[in-house]
Amino acid sequence: MGVARRGLPLEPYKIKNVNPKNLNWLRADLVTENHLIIECINSFSPDYVIDFMGQGMVAESWVSPFQWYNTNVSKKSELLSKLDWQKFLKAYIRVSTPEVFGSVDELITEKHSFNPSTPYALSHASIDQHLALYASQTDFPFIIARYANFYGKGQQLYRIVPKALYYALTGQKLTLDGGGISERSFIYRDDIASSMNALIKNGKVGETYHFSDTKCISIKSLVQKIANCCGIDFKDFVQIGADRNGKDQKYLMSTAKAQEKLGWNSKTDLDEGITKTMTWIKKSKKFISPELLKYQHNYRENHE
Image (cartoon, rainbow, N blue to C red; front, top):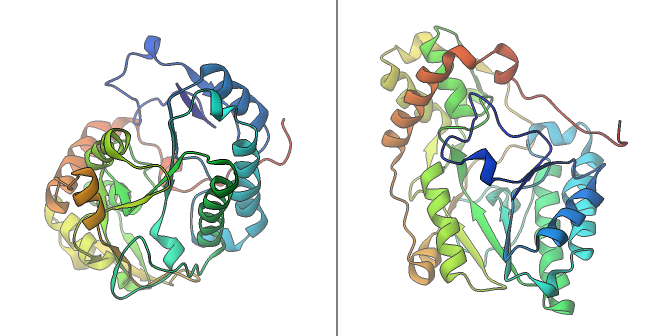
């Protein structure tokens, strides 16, 4: 069963390893049609719910913070409170972000204190804490899975890896916000999938686990790798733009707990992942239109 604000993905995002006839898909908006999602989950009665839902984007959250709080905290907590989870649920796996920690120089473990620096990050920190609070009163079976930056085949094209690859392959200039000095870790799509299997098999209710590559890289160095992969000159490829408001400088999460308790390790290094993603971009170029390369904000207060 899949639930999303949009319909079943089409090219270039099409889910090719799933027979659509075997996949029930509900198109519903968390803000305006929360009742449909609640009814769907209660009716389907899944053993596991994997929750990727929420309003994304960091810099944009400064424009209308209440939209991020309403979506990621208010509506999410409403959904949780109205699930008949006692009848069917083994675990609710909540996908979270290292943004909740703010900028941190040292390796971040699951016990590190929250220090969010944007409305986006604060909304994620709040719903993570709400889950723990809710479980303390009800024994709600949650697991928090916190991930480094996603990338790979099928990712939204306005994200840095696919966007840089597309620009490199089509001879366009890429703007590096703040010169690309911020540092991030990344995780390839196949490693995300394997982590979900590990959580379902070995994850312990009430626990938090971190999933990431083992290295940090500056966005500038990441784009240099992409330029090299595509056989172009980095200096001719980029231009420097203004930095984003409240952007964290660095975070790198420890995956020791996931390795020890879940038997999980990342298997796709960044160079291999970039190459695989480039292959997807090359095959998908005919499906890529300019609007897919720009984030389109979508928030409805009322059902239309």
